[in-house]
Image (cartoon, rainbow, N blue to C red):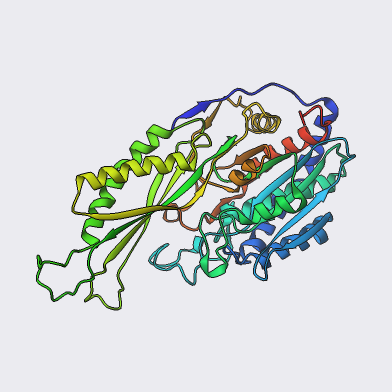
Length: 445
């Protein structure tokens, strides 16, 4: 995938800030981070049922790291964790953020995630040298552990900041609606977190993909309904009054699949390459295969750039469906957009982006000159939409040295390299020091 040229403004740390940065680096502990990662993986936290993991992290921040920290209840099943280290009051407030929920519920997702659960899909950690394997190891659990390690190092170093350092973990991040858990999901947790007092001047979001990303895509969810007649397996083909719904749906699936790459190229913009995938098909009842269904439903997720609204994408999809109807006048089709989230963007010139890119340069020893296109939706979208300038900073996923059998597909996003994650940790630690040792005027707020 090609990259977008990016400019990084030079602003070296003063000797005093460099001393603070080195003190924080000296207190970063990869073993401590790995041990916390193992603990958090072992606490299952599917979307809408994150309470045990969030309560654990609130207690860890308070009792182990030693900062003011709290559990924020949302319901009996879910809630958020947050903590803070206050500065002198003259600086900006920086939030280090990660979601805490995982996208797989092992007890209910077979066979849709795999024929059998792999070890990266199970909420039980295993350490293999540099790798930690288990459900959510690389997304989001290592992000939780990595950001906590930064705060722990700041606390241990005993450095004083001008600005406030906040840390937060929220549930309900994953792009799905957990109907069996109060329809939780699509960034509801972080919306609650920010609207209940944790709203910062800046945010750094940790997420897989090496780089510093100033933008997050949005998404539109579409459902296409293909209609026919409720049938019976004993009816002779061609009998008047009996139309299939599944067979025409197969044709429509192929035509949508041909349109999606065209949509991506047409709507590529800024740092976003907006992909789209057909993700579900629903029809009939497997307990009564003698009766072909009257309706087949097709579901898809289409990503959008921050400068294309869900309404504009809806119109593009409308044009596609009108074309399909014109090509197949004998098909009976209806469709709707049943979910949407606009994209979010932070100016590449904003302080938090520039500081994060400088941190990337310090960590890699190379100039930061380009950012990869991406289409992965995160809570960063909601944070940006709510008006918080945000930098997304990440690491490779999966690790290059992960077992080949665990690299297939998305899996459980469950193979983390401690070395890779610690590189992102050091990058973000730089941004913490660079940002919080300055006045509000210095950083443009």
